[in-house]
Image (cartoon, rainbow, N blue to C red; front, side):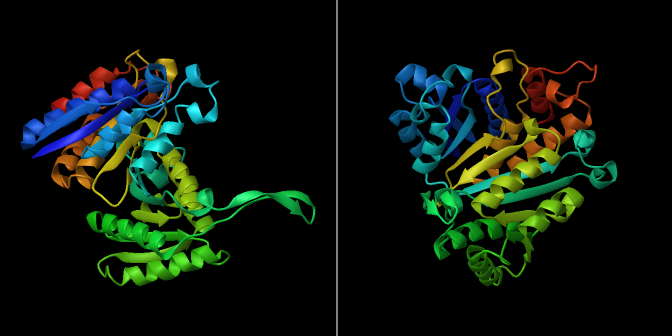
Length: 357
């Protein structure tokens, strides 16, 4: 099979980590008889330098014409003084909107080999954990009516949350289908004891659960979910929730893994085309020094294989290779926690993963 992938390397360490993921995809292609065609496009600060805009029209057209998109990172102090509409980060919202991406998939996996890096107690993380947060990305309070007005106690600000049946059903569909590809267990997070939007959310999720009898479905209030994530993260497989709750819970989940350099993500819409990226930033302080950890980007590429191309075996091959590299004790600087061990470079850890493939 032939697959066309748009590469948005971006700024800082973006080019280094995307190049590592490309090498891994090329190795997978050779092993499983697939052809991956890569076309680079500008985004973020480098796009501003070259074209004056953070998201050139050529980039948007190229991404729309591709089968999927792999992104590195954008931003850096060089562009911090620009007005908001010209900041590199503006390109992220722009490309997600252009691709009509309404779902964010954020896995949070604690590898047993890295359990010492987690801030949680040793007995909680002894066996590691592996969960997936499905976050609604384009609705809710972040996109609702907002403003300022004179209130009872003087000037006040307001933001409104609204969700339609369509928005809830489409994110619910993604969540149930994701659960079917994993351990068939789904928890829906809401605040139905207080919020009307959450009551509608819960009603619709219950309706949809009847379509997926194989999935073990349950509800959980968001405040309890925040506690349960740190008390016993192993109880979760797939979590689905609204934009604001997902924003908060996914960041919490990323921190309990103890290593932001290991965490991938994807944004999806109604088509198979997705936007795949590591959750960390551009790390301009180490850019160009071959110190970056490319694993989150490599795992993002594995997510692309699974969710955009339905190549689950190939995706697992990459994930298992990463597992083995970590089990053998290979680490980049961010994974050493200040120890005196000599870290592997970005290139070296990539080569170790390629060897395991």
